[in-house]
Amino acid sequence: MVHLRILQIIGEFAFSVIIDDNQPTVINLTPNASIPLEDQFTLSFDFAIWKTSPFGYITSGKHNGESFFLLTYVDFKNPDTSYFELSFSSGKESITIGKPKKELNKDKWQHFELGVDLTNNIISMSLDGESKETAAILPDEVNLNLIFGTSPMSNDSPNMNLRSIELKGSSNRVWPLTE
Image 1 (tube, one colour):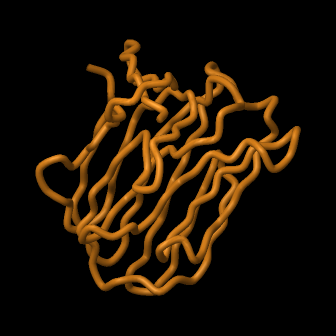
Image 2: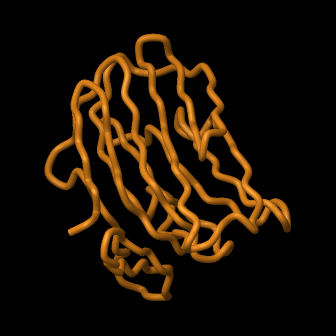
Image 3: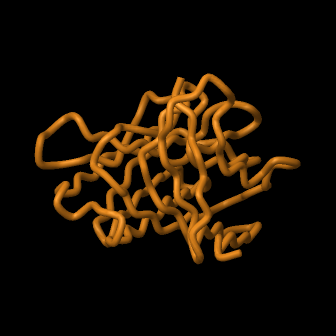
């Protein structure tokens, strides 16, 4: 089983993969209660991939105990390109943006943004200015539980740094990860 070790570096958190049979270490931003969201909301954060392998889960969101979205780093589909895949609707639908592997390293920050429009049933994904969106069947409101570093299906995570997490919508939250 893969275990995540979180290293705090001044101004950011770093995830590294080690082998361990214990529970994974993750950043659970909603350990005590979900965040109620209505209409439209965005989740944004910065991350840097240390190495272009291994494959892994960057963040996941749950709504009422069910998977709402999952952002996955995929390194194995192309020797020169890594993909960031946002899946939703219980994994039945996804949006994918590719990045040349040469642009991914611990000193190159990537800016990610997830946009959710519950009123118009649209999900969007932006990675460093490249944006894609698609129609989806969405609930009228979301009670979001937000986790970084693992997914409901696996404990795999890429080696990455993480900072400046922001949720904007009917409930606003900021986790600068600078403490």
